[in-house]
Length: 488
Image (tube, helix red, strand yellow):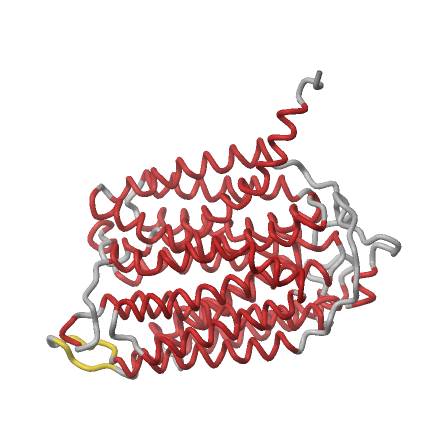
């Protein structure tokens, strides 16, 4: 006869991976649900288009700042505790959006939702601590794929709700999902025993936050304010000054927010660089595809699709990411995550070749976008595995948080670069300036080239020494806990 409580404990353990994956999908959904609303929000809120754009910018800034900070807090105070806090902030932000039409409150609420960006790196760190090595690869690959899966699901679902119901209903729906996801995580995920002792580096967190806000604000608003305007130039100068001071402070700190000595080693630095480049190349796919298929048919290339139909065009890519995440894990197990990352970025580049070859027929557009999603699956599944193999167990959440931050910066730079290309390649259609097909093809070529640079960075990553981790602890057998530092 079984001991009371054992079946329930076993059920929780089996459900931990899908529950964490559900949290990752929720995070991506929360980031994309506002997109269908953007054209109508000035009318619905009585605010200007510039003010409404901050509903996207606030989420980007908050996510970039909080991801490494919450990752470090998770390493020190408990990953489950910080994960629940991030999910809770996301849910509260969604509830605030459901209750108001005031643009100021909406922007604050969207900033709260940005905390959800830390869900994926925290979850990956929990999986490393809790799972045996033979299960870690596939679980991490699934968590990495949730970013694309959630984005592909969130856009059409949000568009349907916006089209057929009051816009607040969409946020009520995401609030309910957030409450459900947080409750599931509280029930199914147990606290990791792996901790990094010491005091939290508050000064380092504030310095990083200030530097990132200056950088991302300049990148995201450069096209609107003017790249040579005093505000943008001042932000870039402030970013350089603040991050220089922050770098020096981190090198001197006893327990820094980001271990820069570790981050500078090739086995950590190169995956971070690859994450920046992959984030750029990945984001170009969804960003340009959405604009291309919605372009008016009068352009000669546009399909004039609705936002719902646009979301459905991206849906096959999200489904493919879900189906292929176990395949990427098998490739990493057989050939190493370095090869998986190189393969993924090469596939992304080949997807853009297809986009350049034919961006007029719907089937060709969907095929090219799906190929890019396949490459993204392989690349995003390999990046956290590379980080996990290169850093000590006590720094996995913060290191993966920095890796996700690099992806976010890459996406922000991609958005600015694509906007700059399309603005300089327009023609008048019905009296309004519309990007030309040549502009879109240049954007594809740019993203594809960046993907090839990412592939070169991946192949430059030193091969990690053969190692094995013991279940539950995340420590390497037969070696001291800082072996990852020595082999990095």
